[in-house]
Length: 225
Image 1 (tube, helix red, strand yellow):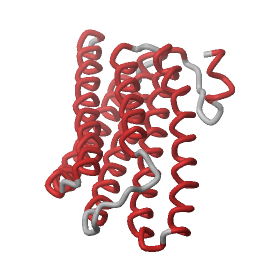
Image 2 (cartoon, rainbow, N blue to C red):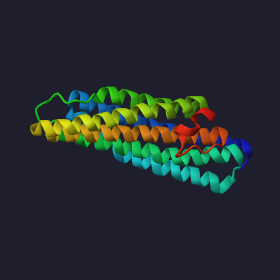
Image 3 (cartoon, rainbow, N blue to C red):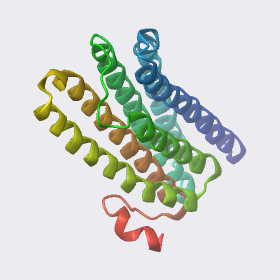
């Protein structure tokens, strides 16, 4: 494979992972809207779209592995392909989290609406911004934006802990709300996991661009990236 052809294939790989990203991002958006609107049809769209996300993950992986086998790239090209493989796995899991949220919403709508001590839309807004920024830093190769994604994760973690404390107290004080509180708690937890995957994507972008592995200690190294 010539270098020109190889770089064309890298561009094709990038297009494929971005298409995968679009599906995963849409799944989260639909699941969050389903919660806000108590919309069963939106939940079903999330569930119906999951096989397409899984299929796209397999196709991206196969394409990336073929590139590694045929070209044996070095340096930044190698890091790019390895980053895509890891990002691909995180995007598939984002799709899984969206499915989990949709399933919880399907259970939640069986009950009359209750005022629960958690702001799921506010948490979802921050998480969705993290996902968008993580994808944008991949598109632009922007390690500085990736660093800001890492920093944003602390706020989502704080919101998830607050949701756990408030909803746990709600279940104790209002047992009739326990089922719905548990659903809301699970939705908050799944949103926190989506934020974790966005963080993973940002870390992989930093690895691709700068060759720095910041996994497991992003908070300690963010100022030095």
